[in-house]
Amino acid sequence: MTTVITCPECKGTGQLIKDPCEDCAGRGAKSISEQLEVRIPAGIRDGQHLELRGMGDVSLDGGPPGNLYVRISVADHPTFTRHGDHLYMPLDVTISQAALGDLVTVRTIEGEHELTVPAGIQSGTELRIKGRGLPSLGSARRGDQVVSVRVKTPTELTDRQLELLRELAIEDGVDITPPADSSIFERVKRLFGTR
Image 1 (cartoon, helix red, strand yellow):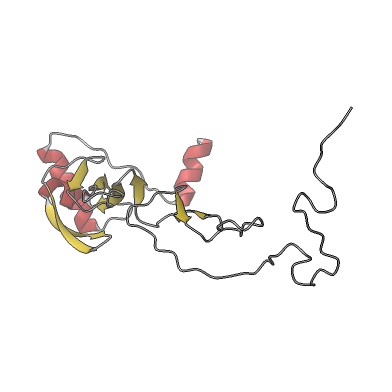
Image 2 (cartoon, rainbow, N blue to C red):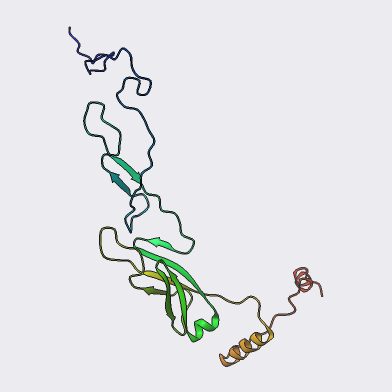
């Protein structure tokens, strides 16, 4: 019975290096670190890979070097959230802005943009700015920027603001009974049912 195996000494190369150099230990190549500049295309997504041809490991049998694959990790942004090529952001407006409408300045990835908040807008309404999102990778198309309106209810009001809101409630036909003194002492008394 005959068995054919690769020579364990020369690993099938047909050569033995009796006095290998210290750098490569007889492999014919040594490891080095190199910094590369990589061009990141506009619109690339988290988890996608870039292929750098010829920048991988050398071939020990004399062939061309392999390729280097760079995995992209896109950092989170403090203002924008990405969904595909669209960018989403919140916009806080006051009750008066929501009721009367306003022209506000919002941030985009290319600078500031004036956006009309229509009168009577409701919290949760989305306003779209066409073509202000991210580029579609490998295409001339762009996504949109979507602005989600959040109507903020004030927590601290001046006497004049309270008076105006009460007048508005009367105009709306709502009979609002103002709460009792909301000091901590009064809250504790109400909690324990004391008078």
